[in-house]
Length: 232
Image (cartoon, rainbow, N blue to C red):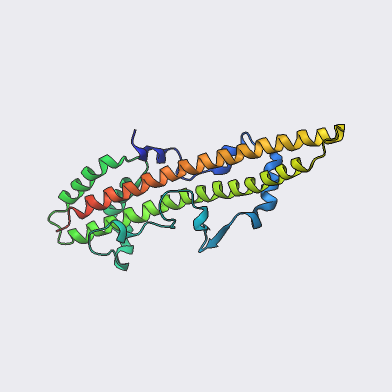
């Protein structure tokens, strides 16, 4: 099954929902109270950002795909902001970028469009508009995935801090055999177990989102090459 199929499951990740189903409520109360200081994430232009050291995916951390990284055609300047005004370009860009459309189908879709506008004097300009539309749409999906990754990473960091605290408290308990001490030990061990589970779950979910991001980047490269290949 193609990696891009992983994008079909959810358009916008709902990171919290998949963990709420099994984690104890007290852990989320601790996380909510600790969030402002503990999650090493920053806000920039409305987007959550991570420090580079906290980025869990292969490759450099960046908020958006860049045309310069994949596009061999003329730079899509400000004039391409109007790609949505061309109904045919808009419809195709949205279909090509959709998680429902597998990457291996996209070159034929692009070729059919290029053949249909073969006699159009603005053919190259419209193909460039198509690339810009694909880039914008895939960057929208990328922003959804990044939101999910930031959520999982923040939860993992909060849980790691909580886990360290529980372990310190356990180490500090006396071996006096008192009933109160053993009750506290049992409670702390329980919380340590579930906190470790949150870390494990969050790391696994972050890795999955990284795979989705990688699939998205691969699709962008495939589309950029396919579209540029029809430029005169």
